[in-house]
Image 1 (tube, rainbow, N blue to C red):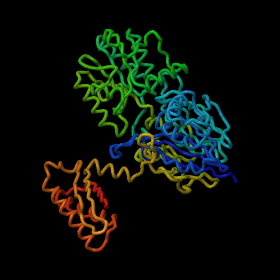
Image 2 (tube, rainbow, N blue to C red):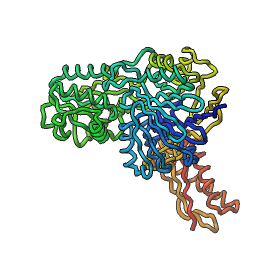
Image 3 (cartoon, helix red, strand yellow):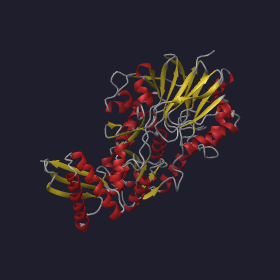
Image 4 (cartoon, rainbow, N blue to C red):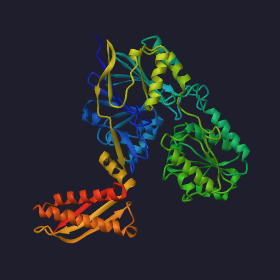
Length: 553
């Protein structure tokens, strides 16, 4: 009887982002990715959302290492927070490790951990784990599918992938190796990218975007062109650079991450841009507009990104205006639509002509659609299947695709964050849960808690009423106050009657508590909060945060 193997999901199932899973056998753990998710409007003040890392921290001594599928933030962005508490070895491609290293050095998280490069097709023993790194095509170079050769057979994780027959770097998804595994030892369990599981057909080649970009340069030969894309999308940057050079344009880079990633990709030989065409963005004003191409960050409308500052007229290094062409070479990540729309509107108000994916083919997804997912299922022929990487509706559609492709319905599990599944000789089944809630990051502080978020929502939606009063500790009589301070509820100058009534209610409440013989400050605070809250709700139908400040003398 072969030893059981477990897979625990800490994030990435039911949302876009926070991708993190753990493979377990012989009492050892191997972590697969550790990503972040960007906050939605219901998370005021939050910078990032992490997987709950409690399970990993509690079992730190059992962890053999971390394997990175590719270098996107939703797969590597949480690594620094994990390595603050755990020293281990991280395995990934040179680019994935290079992208992660910058973040780790910024946060001083690397410490005693090691970064180990792996190559296409390499098979490496990591403790008891036999891991094979299989090339896949994605929107960042050097992505991997990972095949874990375990006592229960091969667990194949596709990573983020598409089947691009003409990729920019000619590095295709290695279906032949996946097919060879299927034909020999077989694929025991397939974990597959579900992002585009609702989309029929096949994703177009990344080269098709290059054709559109070149055509835009032809159509606007005398205008300055500014293009915003993901700084990690090295293939897109390469096509932009090729188009710019072909039309005699100089290239300026805008945004810290763009400068850093382009330098890294050139150093690794993944990006070819001649030195003589690169100019400092501060010097583009001295050049003919038709001889300039600016490649910028900020395509998701991030508040302080280079493009957002351009749209607001607050970028100190560059300004856009009448005659400029701005291309947003990306789709808005779910949740970012409003921010992207505001950036487009701001650019248009400044006189720029804005081209985005809604009006031209200036972006193509790095995730396979239904045709590609079915092709992979047909090649891998897995015994068991779990859809990963997507919102619940994506996972559900992908599970149905697998059943349609012949995977037994009993062997298809629809999992969510926190689920643990176990592979045994008898089959696959759920085997418990691990902590998997959201870990919120505000600044450098992790886990600000749901209570803090709830307070922030109340403050943003209903405002705050602060009541300040000083009482005599012996008699319970009011010495000074009550003073009513409001923010976001009603403007004090326009609501004198409401404020005066609130003072009256506070005075009555304190008198009642004092009359009962109680002198406890906490009892006074509760009475103040209850009386003011009741009056405010009855008079305004609002529920602001009530903050009683009761002092004794």
